[in-house]
Picture (tube, rainbow, N blue to C red):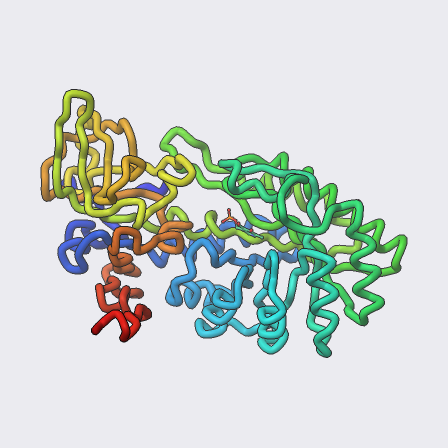
Length: 419
Ligand SMILES: Cc1ncc(COP(=O)(O)O)c(C=O)c1O
């Protein structure tokens, strides 16, 4: 959890008051601190760099705002993309195709053709995908995603590396996939696995690294192929709860790289952090519109619901909340922070101690940069909120709030219904 400055009881984001941002841009509002994005990128890259060359592929599914992509493009980041839409957004933000790795699942022929046209690297998920790609005349740079049988994560929905999931080629069949790729004239450059998301300890990453190293050695022994890049995927967690500890990145990097260096053909490690780079850089600001006391509960009703931030409702995720205009005042009153969506599951936070809240106050929901805006929806016909990027004393809109016209733009009423 990022610490924010307190200026006379006001929460500061960069050098700006949260309340000033809310007044200027309206709520709900996602606010991202550009300096924090750069710091996080440099920290994770810097943790691995002393040990071996590292490629940090920002997993842009976490937050694909063009301005955020541009910041990471300037930092020299690589990209992990999962759809042609993400690939094209990254190209528009200025990423060269050779810095983009596409890792899809159930990839259509149309998507494969588009990827080949864009000249990005393709991380293949199945034999079918390999064979269908081989039908296209070009031979792009490829790697394979193995299902390592090692899974971890903050919720069952995000554990991707376990045997029972839909992802990757089973580890017992992976050497055969490389053999077949060579027969088709591809020269694969790497091997990839992704265990899951929100993993707060090094052990499962070490375990998957050992699986990958063994497979690389088998590939070298059986096929004489020397793979250069060992990609351990993403999933590095962050401390969402004030009592959570941040993962010790230096020992994580040292433990993982010590299993690779001199033990297989890989000279480069790739990591694919999404959440780690972007989650704690962003707060969701939402206004208190209605405070309701019932016989059972005290509700702090705000203007953002699970249409704006779905993680609490979808995964039961914890996000710290604070009252931005009563910052660090004694928290002595218990609230559920709930939104305007017509469902009981519409909550941002439950049973939280806050300073006594009044209508007109401003709530800050922490760590909402990853899987916040990208998972927002128009449910209940509510537009997705404005996004703002702060750097020191300046604030720029990086995405406008959606209007009713934006939401209805693609809808049509057949003329026969208009008579
Ligand atoms: C292949 C792959 N890489 C990286 C990530 C990023 O995960 P996180 O944002 O938890 O780091 C994901 C998330 O689903 C993924 O599927």
